[in-house]
Length: 258
Image 1: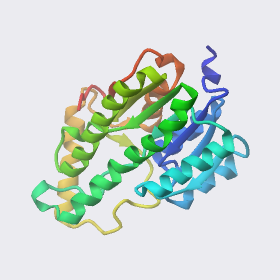
Image 2: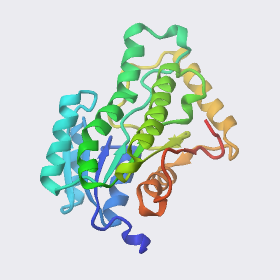
Image 3: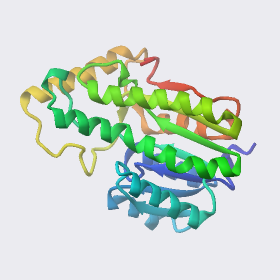
Image 4: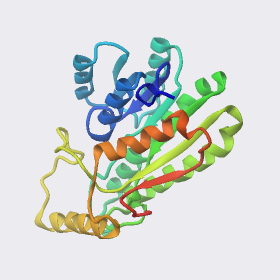
């Protein structure tokens, strides 16, 4: 296998593609020969088309809504003819605080943000992959399933882990592999569109620092990872190099197992 062209002839659908890990995944897939549908709720995703003129379809969709998710999947299949790889990257902590301080609507918003887009995209992609008898799904989970000040987010990502295992059981006979990565703390540029636009209070800054401290302390390497380190793990599981791996959640946290 030519590792510089691992994804030649493959079509990938990548969510949360406008910034951070998702954008890094899109750029690496294109560099390694894939055709890519890059999807995000933000129009920032359209900037990718300015840098990559071919093999790229940029779509805006709110993937927390099943109808928009299904339409984006349909648009990608109509454009490229198939979906070989699905990378579910949408999600992320909106608030950071001890569980008793979350309000009802905040708990629901965290679960909707970090679980439902993955559920919806898997549901929308499976019929296409089943019909072609092949496919690779990589869900981006989190080591925050064991951590402080993010209980609703951790619960949502625990759901992603369960979804990964169950779908792998159901679809191995259909030629579809389903895996996940569980990123640890990751250094990234400041988000151009923050998940939570409200300015942090002094108490919220303390609670967030507790997350940072716990994340570093739990890592054997005592550091945050890079976007490239997260992208490398995701693309390994998406590639044919991982052809005999399914139903696995791979921690990518410098030794923190989550």
